[in-house]
Image (cartoon, rainbow, N blue to C red; front, side, top):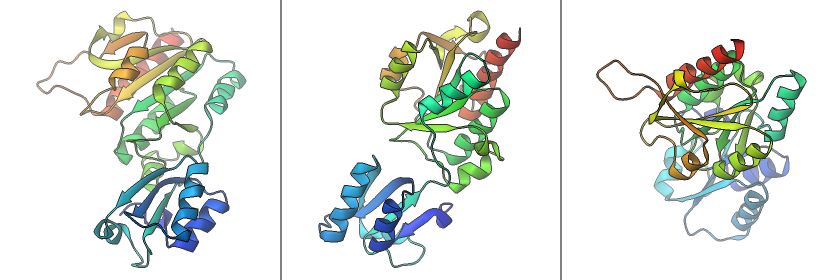
Length: 246
């Protein structure tokens, strides 16, 4: 289990973690458990907008490294999340048009880490991930980012489609990666931009895709049908950087 050092087990430990202001990514609670401490934990989780999963005792035993979970395990973030405003502020400070990378359905921590690393090197001001159906900032992600997580802010939002709408008011244009799109070299990707990437399996979700202004495809010459999500991010992010430099 890659999360070990950021796994918090047991009722009191989890309540303390919430109250000390730790960022909890996910909470696993024994299904059907309704006693006082568990209700307190649920209340704290609601305040922190934390994802709660109700699971069997077998699943908790699997996740547990101490064997003393008492029906509750919290997965804490290895790093603090930024806000979307923090990311925009960063672009202002650098006096550059905002360049954001938004990720839909990226569940593999190695992919997320690699994308944060690419975001940093391609000059993106930050990365935005959704709260549900996505990996958070775990130790594995931090390691895969090769230090980039110290420099590139990551914001976590409840609703990606709504966040895109709000960012459009700030003047951003959105381009999503999809095989059905226009070849990326034919698109104008300069100015304030958000690059939206989905997982290899599912791609960008329909609701999020509908909010995008452009759909970009990466030309493929090989025999398989898709690139790894972090590689696709790299190819498109560097096309955006090339156009910015040009």
